[in-house]
Amino acid sequence: MAVTDEMIHQAIAKMAEQFPNEDKAKYDVLLKQMFQEGMLPKEAMKVTQDQIEQVYARAYYQFQSGKYKDASTIFKLLMMLDPFDARQPLGLASCFHKEKNYDLAAAFYMRSSVIDPTNPMPMYYASDCARQLNDLVGVKVALDRVKFIIGKNAQYSALLARVDLALEALEKEHDEILQKTKM
Image 1 (cartoon, rainbow, N blue to C red):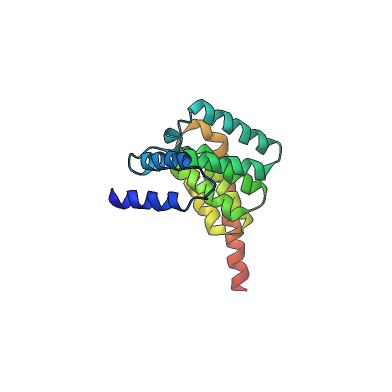
Image 2 (tube, one colour):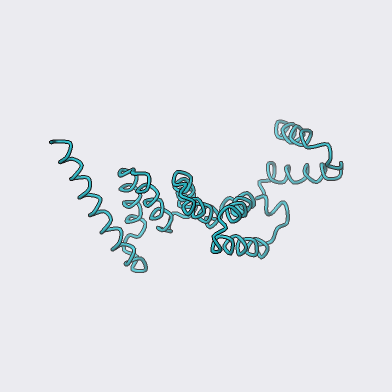
């Protein structure tokens, strides 16, 4: 605990001089709650789930309005408040995807998939990012993962059909590449 106390003290000492001492004391309490008591930032800051939902709705609205930078800023804030909510990295990935920043989009789709391994959609979208990056191995891995996640879940039968078609097309593309290299 002494190491954590020292780290918290150093972090607070580095804060800008414009913060009044009572704010520094509040930060001290928040940091101790998060790092010593294991509270999520939203819990330590007493942010309710209702408030999270309102902020999420705002991020979603910004995304739907094509304001991807604004939406991504809000999704980042939400990720800091609750790093275990898979919607936030999914939203952030979607922003990066729309902006054609496929590397970052794929990374955040993966993060969302790790948080919620039962949702096949992040990996499906990650396969498109890999496709855009011309990473055929990445496409195959992502699509195979989608199939695994779906399993026999009838809810995703339409998605499974699309994945099967994409895997067939990928196999044909792979075969064509092999034929070209043999010539």
